[in-house]
Amino acid sequence: MVHTNKYSSTAVKLYQDDDKKPMKFSIADVKGYQFRNDYYELKEVRGGIRPGKEYSFMKRLTKEDSRIHLYENTVKVTTSNGRNMGSYTYYETQYFLKLPNEEGDAVWPLSSSKFVPNFDEKMSKLFPDCPSLAAKIANKEDGYFYAQVSLFKKKRANVLMNIIDEYNSCK
Image (cartoon, rainbow, N blue to C red; front, side, top):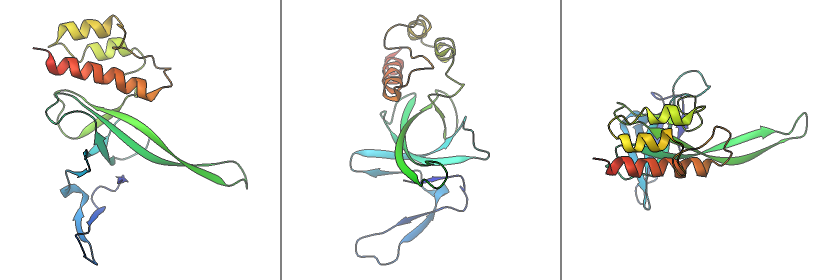
């Protein structure tokens, strides 16, 4: 996993069979990589709270030819238990969306202000070319809506997959 805000100075190392020294590539030269059956793409995280640009290789959950893409990103989180109590580390899965007709490699977290609150209003406006889908989202139909307070990130991802699948088949 690569997660960085130092886009220009970060190197990706690649070892070939029996190599002692890795080949080094600038992160800007690596579009993505495949690991087993999963494909990871370098994406710029938008809507974050950190200053500057943030980049991460994220697992693409949608087909390559999808009109919208959903990505899964797992990050390492270390928190402190308080003064002199030590810290602990865990991994958190986050989901990101690449919007239709948006240029570049920017993705947005599903919990960002781009989608919530008022998911139904904000998301339905993204699909003027598919009125039936926009109506399902605006009407908060089951499977096409999630509330800001939804604690289940996987549920948000499932809702987005429903929307993506329908948008891809919309004529």
